[in-house]
Length: 177
Image 1 (cartoon, one colour):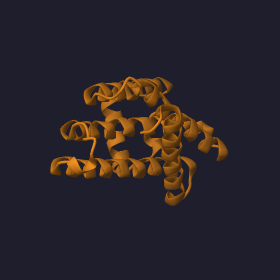
Image 2 (cartoon, one colour; image 1 turned 135 degrees about the vertical axis):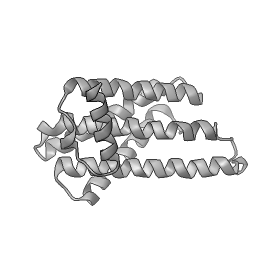
Image 3 (cartoon, one colour; image 1 turned 120 degrees about the vertical axis):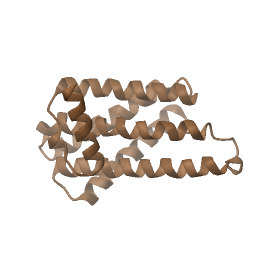
Image 4 (cartoon, rainbow, N blue to C red; image 1 turned 180 degrees about the horizontal axis):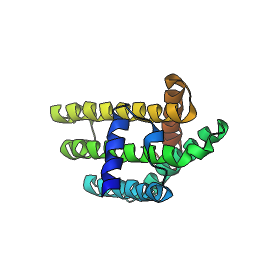
């Protein structure tokens, strides 16, 4: 339990941009457990929100893209030895920030077919969800900035490119989103 509480403290500090991935323990077992936790959380959220049957493949695609592109970025910089800690940091923060987005999505409910029918609460919660998404981009950029020893701007551009790659592949594989 001490390891879990330590990981949560480090992940919260990462989300507050006060630590780097080097503060995450190097543990392949923890890395694997966080992959499972991330996918399970995606499945639970998909079930809670009534998403389609393709939640599992979308979750696996998203996870694979982030982990693969993280590895590529580190390999280009010849820093592959940082992969487990960096990927663990990305996953831990992703799980924490997803836990913030779940109540927002649940309270907002399914979006209406016509955007003009959105209620005031749905619009406000949508803005909050967008803020959490941007925060997640900033956190991921912060992690990658430390991991690849680059500027924050380069790391942010890298992370945004990951999101664009995911959206493009998601659209290609699963149709209009």
